[in-house]
Image (cartoon, rainbow, N blue to C red; front, side, top):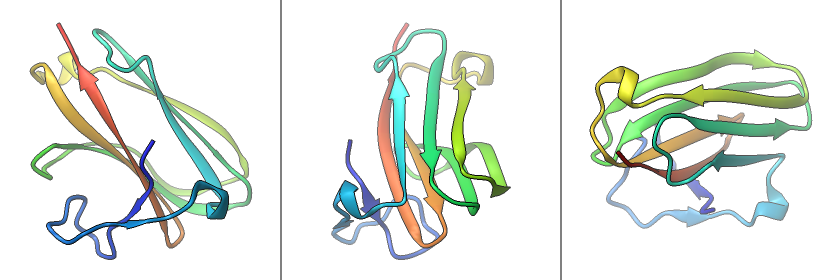
Length: 112
């Protein structure tokens, strides 16, 4: 799991990312199974009420889906992502989780 602060609203940046140690984050992000064929479960835990955005992007940076956007209480959250139902082909995609001023990203692989 790579944790990245892109420093802007762009999901993908040509600049070198800033790696944030996971021990410094107020949340955790996981995606399983990875790679997946039918359904990916994306889960995260936040420790305090926060403004949250969970989105999926193409490897080229195009927004594919917003799974969560808004205030959420401290808890564990699980979302299903089904790329095939959106007409996506096999390949790599990026899950980006923003919690306040911290960002985590994870690459997921869709297979057929």
